[in-house]
Image (cartoon, rainbow, N blue to C red):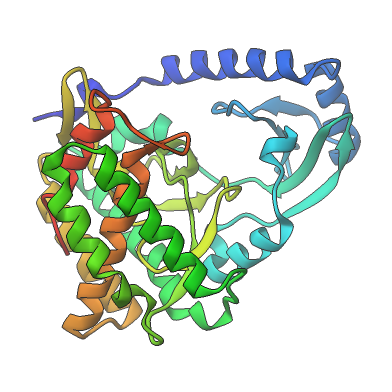
Length: 331
């Protein structure tokens, strides 16, 4: 099945970006788009143009023809933690653009970043996931596995901001909350993974910086090769057990249609490629390690699809359709 028929086209993404820009500046008053352009030109000394993909809590422009920087204006709720950005750069190296704060415009925080090459996956996904372009998607899947593997091998440099006991208690509470709120068909898996939480808090299990929003707009790719060129939007990244952000793999392997979640025709092969690349790159060899990683993965899947704006999704939410589909697979 060609799942690209359910994917948003580039024209729709650009229309969404125009809407997001308008909404952003409605809330940013009295700061205007022209004010941001003036500030960006002053910082970069170069012509600027808005990026094709935008967000609801920030406004981003590309500055320059040669240096090619990005200037981003963020609402206070979307302000970046520069210590987190530095840790992301240390952990994931070239997957994360260099970022520095460049002041404040009214109540908006200004950041300058390296321009990530390529385009967001949201723009390229129809091409990369096309039935005749499976090699492109293979490369994207391999690069995502390599991205995750870097945090396993570099976890010794991560110092948790809260105790692992506090983090474990928080995850436990989330799972118990979902067990009370979600339909009964999810209870067995929730109870199982809750009982297995000690595996991902063992002394030798890595605590890493996990990206919290691995949706298609935050993964940048080369549309001609499928290579991941960068991962952006680290605002909500947190330190926790390795594997919590593995739900991002589902962003590559499926899409939401009019009546459910549809997987790429080769998703089983692509899953095998992902796990083989991850294990080989990170040097993960034991079955106990792999079992613990799957616990982290499942917890992350429940976090991503079981909650919306901090509360459990209701029984009619499409997130439950996705949950049911993706929980059927393991590592």
